[in-house]
Amino acid sequence: MQTRRSFLKFGAGAAAVGALSPLAVSANSSDVEWDEKHEIVIVGSGFAGLAAAVEAGKLGAKDIVIFEKLGVYGGNSTLNAGQACFANTDLQKQLGIEDSAELMVQDQLKSGRGYASEELLRHSAELGPYIYQLTKDCGCIYRDHIINTGGTSATRSHQVVERSGAGFIRPMLKTARSYGVKTKIRHKFEHLITAKDGTVLGIQVRRGYHFGHENSGELINVKAEKGVLIATGGFGANVSFRQALDPNLGNEVGCTNARGATGDGLIAMLAEGAMPVHLSFIQSGPWASPDEGGFGYGAGFSLYNFPHSIAIDRNTGQRFMNETADRKTRADLEVQRRDKDGNPNPALLIAPKHEAMKDPSMANVLKYNVAWEFDSVDAIAKHFDLPKKALKKQIDDWNLYVKSGEDPQFGKRMNMSTGIYLTAPFIVQRLWPKVHYCQGGIQINAKAEVIAAKTGQSIPGLYAAGEVSGGVHGVSRLGGCSTPECMAFGVTAARSMMKA
Amino acid sequence: MKTVNTLLALILGGCIAVSAQARDQRDYHEMVYDSGCKTCHDQGMKAFPSDDSCLQCHDMSELAEQTKREGHEARQNPHDSMHYGQEAPCMECHGEHTPKQAICMDCHNFDFPKFKQ
Image (tube, one colour):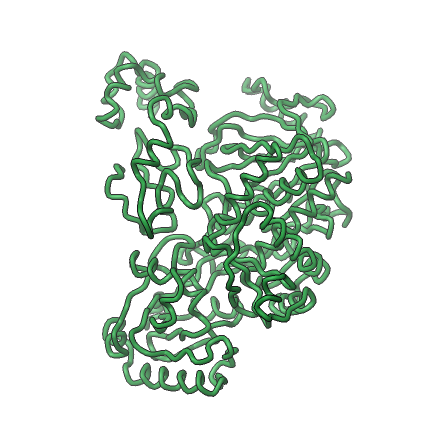
């Protein structure tokens, strides 16, 4: 935070050591030396930032800038399976899927375990069909097939053909630029610049920043005429920050996030007095593989295969969870798979090749040693040192559940795997959760305005959207539900700023 | 420690005069070293070179052509990837004085056999 008071302090301190740079801000916020001025200032080039830029462009904004800290665009939004849950789309109707915004909200409330914001979820779900169309207008191409994700009561996860967030990010970046949006890499947001009354006037940015070199580049002051949108994502890659909030999430647990997901935007808004919400609710992805870094290919493979596959504990040779339960349920159970010394002993996802081969993810995981093919149950048991008898019985039992359409063991929704028996050859991937998403963040309202902790009122000039905001999803976010929410609140922020 | 710093400052400051072998360097860039540090360090010796610096000699679309991949791997072209197109700056993956690895490797077990760490 840089209020007048801290300007004074900073100025005096820096002057005393003779290190006052020519760009340093002056003592009075009204005569801050602005290096740049823009109508709309967006920090972060992921789903939320790009959706805001596109919407603001559509609404006629003439001078929009996006600052990206890293050397590449898209942040964490380009590193995922490219899914977005929308309810009530043309594609769902074509495929005979009955769904509604209300049903989507109810599914999310359930996974939120009483902590989710019904108002914000509804706002986002109702904007779903608009966002779906906006992305198509940007040139995003969806598959004809909609996929199932954990914890949903209707099939609604629309996926771009790239099966990666890149399938959203690249076309949206292009579209934003077509509206004249200025996009800048290596520009790290340092802090907000505020007037005495707390109104956000602009931001300080480190231009020419190289990730990991905190003093690289130079500081500039950027004025925002209509508002500042913080769309900086989560803090999953900041191990000390996340471990302070959840002691279970140290280095032993990996992370799917882009390296830049260090929580800078969140921390700067906290310093400004924004209301923190649910910071300890940090979600790990139950589909991750310990045999590659980050999000990788394993996630795509397990996402496709969970409905008709089983996850096996290596000590018992048996299932230990509903493979399509919500993410928290699964990740919590997966991380409990340990050897007798308490060391991680990742579970095995066993998928039938005859079904797995229908998705291109199989070729990827086999090629890059993230999963392996086995001809028989014996071969799996031998390779991974599993109790063979127990595993055989488990597979036989599972196939009976497929036949009867009921899973008495864990209550899995079996209509996703009708007729898909688990037979050899098998494809096996190891499962170990990775920190994936921060449900917590700073509080926003349905106008994407940031709420001040002290007053419960919105902070003038300050907007937030996407993972940096908190309280939307509660305890656990459903798969494919961040992408549409990031974009919905990005769009909302743009609309609010254009009205401001 | 102080001595080391002073020494480093001397080397950095007098880079052109001092043999560049004092720093890690790429043999195939010998000609560039002969022309002096500022050939690449276009933003002063204390700053990283600009992202345009390497592009004085290298051309991104030519590089994309050189590292073109076929079929299944087509979008794994590090100079024209699915995630970043032709926009990933050189220094995201390549280091002149320090070993680096391709940014792709943060998440993928790709094989880039010609990549020089």
